[in-house]
Image (tube, rainbow over all chains, first blue to last red; front, side, top):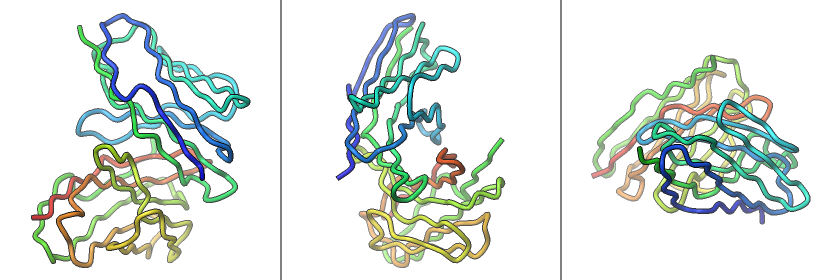
Length: 111
Length: 110
């Protein structure tokens, strides 16, 4: 069974801190997505990656295929980064775009 | 920019009512999805569609049906709403494996 596990479940940081959220996934997942959901808002796709590393502004996502592990890093965190971050795996052997979601990490950045 | 629009942000319905949740995307995507999101359970797939008039069950289809008469529109139908269907409902479309979500519809069934 395909699974995606995220940690930590909750994370509180001070403004300016470097933040890491981790995601482990099972066999059969071929690409990893990182999503962001603000309170009361919709979900925004941050990254989709199947190898290596991607960077967008202060956000960096990495994936280690051998270890089946991905991380989302936020440098110089800011209160506006407070959101739920969701890791999701897709299995292109099955339904394209049909994702298996982690339970999310609730990040709170204090000023 | 891709836009996925859900018809209602907040709805309050009574048990037994028929509920329609509408979703429209403007990028000619073939794939569309309906999810529900509940605390502690994360996002769960209800139904998805690969093309007009096509539909496939997701992980939790019971109590729901869908309609895709036009490529841009994917509707979720609760034939007879129940209190355990109180949830946040999220529509998404996808292209090249990347998902684009709507703002969500928070449904309360009394």
